[in-house]
Image (cartoon, rainbow, N blue to C red; front, side):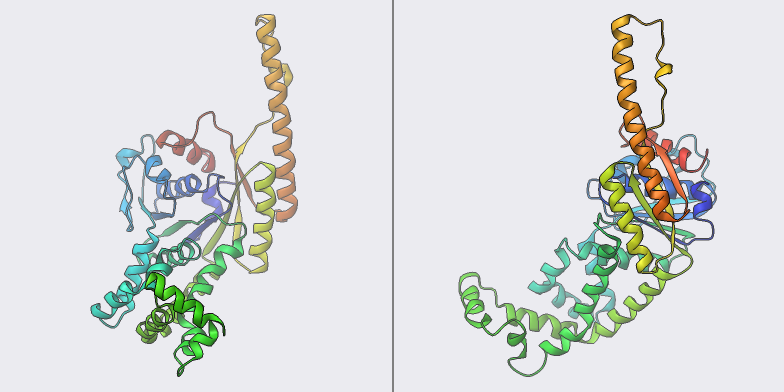
Length: 357
């Protein structure tokens, strides 16, 4: 099976998995392959190291999709279009506030609020929330396929639940509780919080209760919109046109995490399409060592071949473990390539494997 068959009839591909398994490059290769098939595809990455930009031969990517010129992809006939962007969580959060606020003035007040600045810049939760928000925004555009490279996570639930937790904070019961008459906000923070917060204000100038209350007051009329968007995103994530693709490597720890990921997706009833295993060591035979080499070189080569055979058997055993956990669901394999994947050549190599080119 090829990646094209894996994604037949899909409009959204969400690549999930642990960090360091080649998820960003795999997402780019999937997007490239589907664009070569004739689709208009947008790939979204959250990778601040700019690996996607480098792989596509671009100096940088922005917070909105940018069309990749076919001239940058030698040897590939792009019958469709490939667009790429790198998510800027802070900017995406700001743009969401600007769209939902009743006026530009209200939007600026919210963005100046200290609580909002901390919330929109936090690594935990904001990346996931803004990734889903950008996915929602692009789903309204005219792309045939969206490919999302998600933040590294230790479980699918970590990624899938973070946006809901943040949305619940922005649009749920916390708002009503904090805005009730005098004293409730303080009690939510704890009965002993008063002296601590007063001391904090004296030293730092930060009036936490005032900032939180002001933030929720400014946000008040927008909470229904947050909830409505959250409901539509939830529908998108469970839609049959959505494909969750699990990306892993063949090493022991990533395979363990992949099994946990699959269980999380199954428990949350997410539309799972299959897995892609990167950096697989192919099997070798000790008989492949040439006999006409000098004795010392032949001995060293035989030792290297033996070591490789051990790695190949480990990878084969881990893939069998995945096959057992996945209940015959598709698993595509990408061999361990000789060079690090950081440029167009490496991206094209993975694309050709995944799409049988």
